[in-house]
Amino acid sequence: MLRQFFASRFWALVRKEVNQIVRNKQLLIMLIVPPTLQLLIYGFALNPDVHHLKLGVVDYAQTADSRELVAALTENRIFDVEMVTFDESVLARQVETGKLTVGMVIPPKFSRDLAGDRPSPIQFFIDGVDANTAGIASGYIRQIVQQFNQQYLSPNMRVPISTQVIFLYNQGLTSSWFFVPGVMGLVLTLIGSIVSSITVIREKDTGTLEQLLMTPSEAWEISLSKVVPLFVLLMGDVLLALTIGRLIFNVPFRGNFLLFMVLSGLYVFVGIGVGIMLATLCQSQQQVVLTTFFINLPMVQLSGAIAPIETMPKFFQYLSIVNPLRHYIAIVRGILLKGVGLEALWLHVLALAVFAIGLLAISTNRFRNQLN
Image: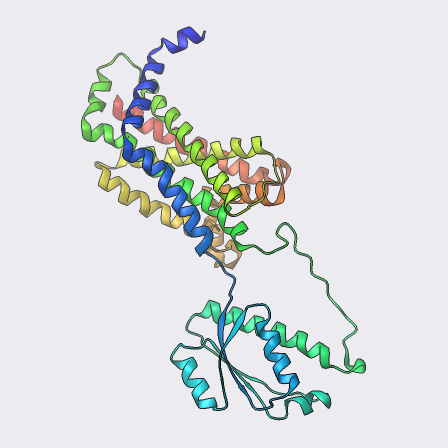
């Protein structure tokens, strides 16, 4: 059986594709270097946490309580005191010019108000040009001041309700654990669609497609011989991305490895299907690269890889349902971070299977029609 397979026309076509890929150094570099760089850059650069915000202080009180408040703001490295002054206009000017992110003004009666259980208004200037940073800084300030207040409230003013928050699956709130699985799907989408489309359309540019038509091979053998080597190479990219996530970013792997590889293989077929379809629609490598980015950018934006889908407008939340990348990222995060199986992911798996079968069937059918 194996002897017949290795002597078949299909195996000869597969070997031809493999030899072409091995000789193409640029393609091999594209399969290794961009995924590695993108994972490292996105993993380190995409970080919603805010640290080391520049803080300026005007402390009119000059008491132990006011110094304790400043220490509370800086002890977790969220704020760094860059300037201490007694002139509010200087403080406002530093925030205006961008040299400070936050300015704080502590009133002279700060300690007396605390001792008398009276409110003591503290003024904060926050640079709101970066709305995300400003909102996070404001939230940090409210939390820290609230905790500080609890230390100075008299017993009869204490609120009898206390809350206990437990973070599941990511106890340390490590942001890279959220971004790296998303970037794995992002990289697989970009590399899979670009490599598969370029591999197919190169046959048109070099004229070897016409030579293939003169061979006694069937159309399904030619199309399948292009899919199989690409699938193996892209599964290597899956392992590369997983290794970088584990070794560099310490992303946990709590689920089933075999399930992860099978479902990743399913998504690889989605990327190959998209690439082959684009290759049948375009006439040159430049055209197919531009079209690939035009298709992939909306997929990335609506996938939840970078921003949570829940924060998007309702229309785009519904639109993301028809985005296969969204379902793959949900699968990757579920397996890696939560350790869940098919019982929790079956809807995403079903959607991914529909996309993979549909895209691969349509694209290979178009490719066979062009051959015929």
